[in-house]
Each structure stands twice: as structure tokens, then as C-alpha cells.
Image (tube, rainbow, N blue to C red):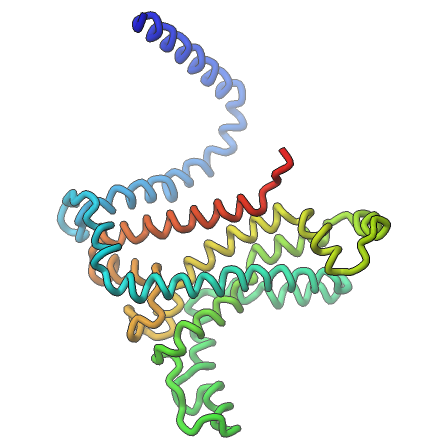
Length: 317
């Protein structure tokens, strides 16, 4: 009986394999066109992710051959790494909570306001909102370091001293009470990237007849138009912008290191998961442990992305 089932399975597997190869050969030109992307995707995404997952179960100092340690890195991370538990995790969640949702909502509101402008003004305002996201991290940091310089020449300190709000300059970028908040402000300012443009493009392509039909059905305010017409029609763009917002938020943590000039940041005030990975991976050369933190960050990104898919995917099917 088992032999018969095995033979049946082999025959079915062989038939499906032949059909798959036949389809690949039939559409070989299409596969040829996507081959460059697939090759780059495998080399720079799939292989590094698999390597990181493998290294996360080892002790690896970049010199000696990796030594298998099993779950030790993850156990250490969640039970013994006091900096991770007391500073990195709270900072990451606070940073993500403000930059992610606030940046996402602000991008939608700005895109909606710009979509109401005449075409000539619209292009200028859209460009002004989008340009900061194009600035390299180092260039952007230099601009904000001048703003928050810890002496009297810093623009913020100069203003506060001039108007009598303070009597001594505040060392913003070395102060644990200010650093993370400054990181949040800068990241929100720079978050109007490709997701913002996607929402703006979606808003400009919503069929105007839907709004006319909505007025006939009883929609009487702009807020109702946004809720009942704009948002449902914009779900694909909102989903894309949401995923991009997650990626931007969780990758923007190195800003604290660039602003303060040190890793770890002063009193771990701006230490988030990305900077914690850099600390262990490129300063301490504990690459196995850094890989474990990277895997945790990858899982966090995946779960948040799935949440956005659940909230914004089309559930009509």
C-alpha cells in the first residue's frame, strides 16, 4: 500500500516538474527579462538574510571560523543585555511610535493639501516636501548639528538666549533629555519620501465623478469625502506608504550616532536597534550577536508590515 502511494507521488511529482519546465521554456523570454533583477535580489537580499540567520546561532568575531552556540545569542539578548532591555527597546518603540504613525499621517495630510492646490503651485510644494528625503544622512546631520549646536552660535541656543528663555546654552546633542526627541523631529521632517509621492499621485488620480456621486448620496463635508471616498480609493498607495514608513523608521536610528558623534550615544539616550547592531557588529566585532539583533529587527519589520497589510488590504475577495 505504501509502495503504491510512493509510486503515485513520484509520478505526480514528475508530471508537475515536466509541466513547470515546459512553462519556463515557453515563457523563456519573460524569464530572461526578469533574470537581472532576480539575480541581484538573490545575491544582495536572500543570501545575506540567510547568512545573518545562520550567523545568529554562532559566535563569530570576523577572524576565527564561526563557532556554533545555538540559542545563546537570543537568550543573552532577552535576558542579560541590560542596555538592550532598559534603553534600546524603549527608545526604539518610542522612536517608532512617533516617527511611524505621525510621519504617515502627516504625509497623507500634506499630500491631500497639496492635491487641492493649482497645478503650478502643486509641483513646487511637492518638491519642497520631497527634497529633504533625498539628502544623504551625513549632509542632513550637518545641517541639524548647526541648528542644535551646544554653544551660543547654534541657531536654537542663540534664539533662546536672545529672548531670555535660558541663561546658559543647552548641549542638546549630548543631553539624554533632548537627543531622542531631536532624532524624532528630524526623522519626521525627513520622512516625506517615496510614500508621500505615492499618496499624492493616488490623490490626483481619484475619479472626480466619485465625489459628485457622493454628494448625491448625502456626503456633505470634506471630512466625509476623505473617509468614505478618498481613503478607500487610496488603499494601495496607503499600504505602500505604510510599508515604506516602517522601513524608514526602523532604519533611521543611526541618526543619533551621527548627531552625537559617538556610538554608543551619550548615556544610551539615542541608542536604538540599528545603532546597537552597529555597536556590536562594527565596533566590538561580535558579529554573531549583531546578527541575532538583526534577525529580531527583521522579524519586527515583517510583523509590522503584516499588520499594515491586514489593515489596508482589500477584503472584498
